Image 1 (tube, rainbow, N blue to C red):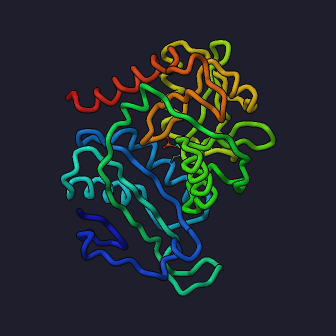
Image 2 (cartoon, protein in one colour; image 1 turned 60 degrees about the vertical axis):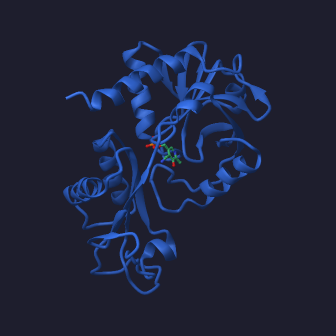
Image 3 (spheres, helix red, strand yellow; image 1 turned 135 degrees about the horizontal axis):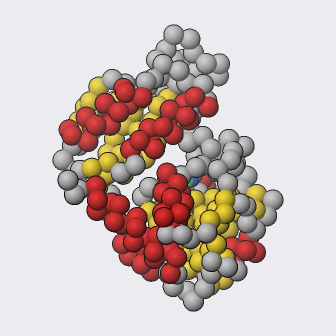
Length: 280
Ligand code: PMP
C-alpha cells in the first residue's frame, strides 16, 4: 500500500514520519476523510473546500488547494484499492516542540487510503446510540486533529454495546462523535444549524439537498434530547456511515424500531448519486 508523507509517496513498509511533526505534539492540524466508489471520488470538491476552510480557521498558511487535489488524485491512482476511504491531514509543520507557531516552515501533508465497504446492513437495519454531554471546545466547525473528546465518547458507545454517542450541549443535540444527527418530527427533517458547535458534514449537506429535491420540509434548528427520543425517525450521517437510521436512543425505541420512510427515500437518492458516479 502506498501512502504520502512530507512530499513523498512511499510504500507503508518504508514510510517514516517525523516525531517533531506538530500533529503529534499538539494535534496542530486539520484533516478530511474522502470516500471513493469504484475508483471515483464522491463529493471531492466539498471535502477540499472544507479542508481549505479548516486550515484558514486555524491559521495554517502556505498550502494550495491544487497541491492537495494533486496529492489525493495521485494517491488513489498509485493504489489498487477500488473502494476506499482516503484520509488526508495537514499539520502546521515540523519543528522542535514549542507552542508558538513556527516561522518559515511549510505545512506537512500525510495521506493514506484504506479499503472501505458500504454499510449496507446498518443502512437497512439501523443502529443503537447513546447520549452524553458535549464538553468539546467551541470550534467544532473546524475538522481538527484534536479528537480526544470524540474518541472517548465513541469508546463510551462501544462499551455500552451501541454504535455511536449523540452529544448535547445545554440540552440541545449537537452531533455524534463522528456523525451529524437528524430527526424527523411531524414530517419535518430537523438538524442542528451549521454553526461553531458542529462540523458541517458533507453528507449532512447532501442529505439537506436531497430532502429539498424530495420536497421534505427541512429545518436547520436545534432540538432537545426529549425531541430526539420522541422523534418519528432519527438519522446519523457521515462519509463512511452514509445515511444510517437510528432505531434506539439509550433505552428508547424510535418509531416502530425500524428504518423510517423519510430515511428510506433519502437513502434511495443518495444511493442513486453514488451509482451515477460510474455511469459515464
Ligand atoms: N461530525 C463529526 C464530529 C465528524 O467527525 C464527522 C465525520 N468526519 C461528521 C460530523 C460527518 O462529516 P462528513 O459527512 O463530512 O463525513
